[in-house]
Amino acid sequence: DEGMTGEPLGKAVNTFVGSQQTNQYRFIVDFGGGPLAELAHDAPVKAVVSGLEGAKVLQQRVEWLGALAKWRLSFLVEAPADKNLVLRAFLKSEDRTLTETWTYTLPPNNRINANGG
Image 1 (tube, one colour):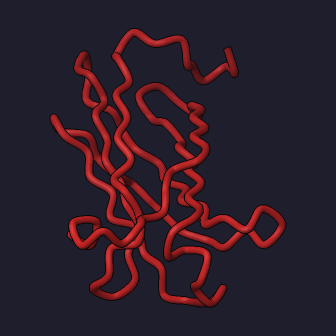
Image 2: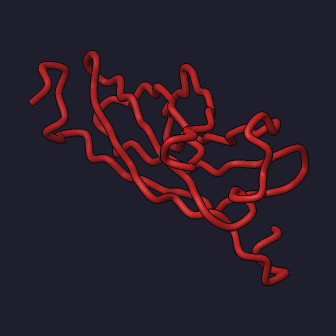
């Protein structure tokens, strides 16, 4: 873990969540700062996204947002029925960890629903 060396890591600066259908959620997490600021905009930045308790990550992508000078992680996840949705994610490039680990817990009876409510 590169954070142990005292090197500053990028941080999650925004989190957005919405739902397209029952038990599926779209997350958008913007990361900035630390080593992210020095990366080339076409650097091979990848996300490591994990869901606990049976959550399934269905798709994910990372893109550079020039206007915001941030890297955006967007992913779709299927939540386990009647359990908390517990997620973790961080960005890396090759073997280098670039950001802190973003964590998020969403209870099963939340107010985010597919009708935009």
